[in-house]
Length: 101
Image (cartoon, rainbow, N blue to C red):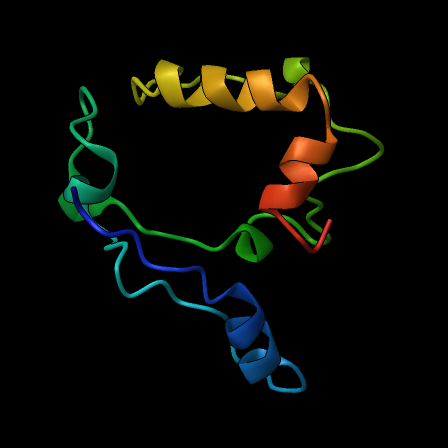
């Protein structure tokens, strides 16, 4: 069985507090391998952006967490998204995964 790394969330948050640095996940590349093949997409022309580059004041959660908040795009990630929707049935489960909520 593959050993899973313990989350370093709190350590990472503390190391970035009070700095202008943004977290970059070095284990999640910014390329086609990260999301799989997407029909009709030329990844040599794709520019990866942070949410803050797309929206002025992005919010992960507005008021509450609902299963209907989860929308599937074209990535073929329905199994992952359905598991998030199941967790969202009781929002404390999502809040346990994302401690800053």
